Image (tube, rainbow, N blue to C red):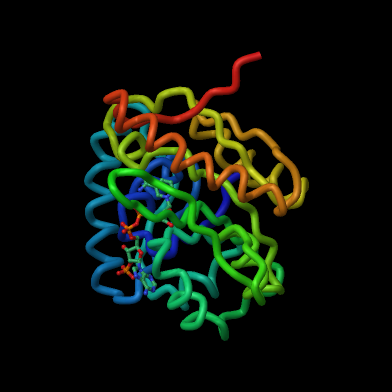
Amino acid sequence: LNEEVAVLGGTGRLGKGLALRLLKEHDVTIGSRVKERALDAVKEVKARAESLYKHSGYKGEIKGQLNSDAAKENKIIILAIEADQLYDFLSASKDYEWRDKIVLSPVTRMKKTDDVFEYYPFDIDGTKVSAAEYIQHKLHDAEVISALHLVPASALWSLKELPSLDVPAAGKEDVFRRISKMFEAIGNLRFLYAGPLQVSYLIESALPLLLNIATRNDFKNAGIRVVT
Ligand SMILES: NC(=O)c1ccc[n+]([C@@H]2O[C@H](COP(=O)([O-])OP(=O)(O)OC[C@H]3O[C@@H](n4cnc5c(N)ncnc54)[C@H](OP(=O)(O)O)[C@@H]3O)[C@@H](O)[C@H]2O)c1
């Protein structure tokens, strides 16, 4: 099944990596606040795709748009937005048509003090919530799914085969299934359903844990696998 997916903030490290991998099977629109930047990212991703898929080829088409147009034209929308800028993005995008859209959040907000990464949640009326719950609260018409926090952008952008990584995800189960299927074609990312959006903070907060371990043990591109 070929999907049409927009990657907003797709000019950044995670966004370009996701666009590159999704392009193998799906149509991708890179979104940006500045159309020129989106078009530059498209060129970069296309050039990279020519090398990565030299032997296999790729099926998707790629284009660049303003975030607003990319969101309007696609059903599945990945928010590859810098975590500290989420407030800004959500207020700039509050009038987009979010009804019935699937919004995938890979966002983890962190603080780094004295070389220690800590989870930094959002706030709704004094209650601490995850980034994904905060997005769902603001974009109440959309279906938010939380995933990909523990997949390093560098692994996605690399010209090597993706390492086998597990991808815990939270949200509604039917949405999880569709997103999981969309990524299945890419290979090596095993999506694991963790439950409703309320467990997203557990997934998001695994990222600072992973980064604290990685920096102290000299691991590059650290991800997770669940062993059974
Ligand atoms: N890097 C990773 O390995 C990784 C892995 C998993 C998850 N994540 C999560 O993915 C998200 C993106 O990470 P990243 O490393 O790709 O970030 P990044 O490169 O720092 O930034 C991504 C994009 O955010 C957009 N942006 C910045 N300020 C904005 C604003 N005020 N309003 C709207 N868009 C704005 C920019 O796009 P334009 O300037 O083109 O609009 C930028 O290219 C983060 O939330 C992070 O937690 C990252």
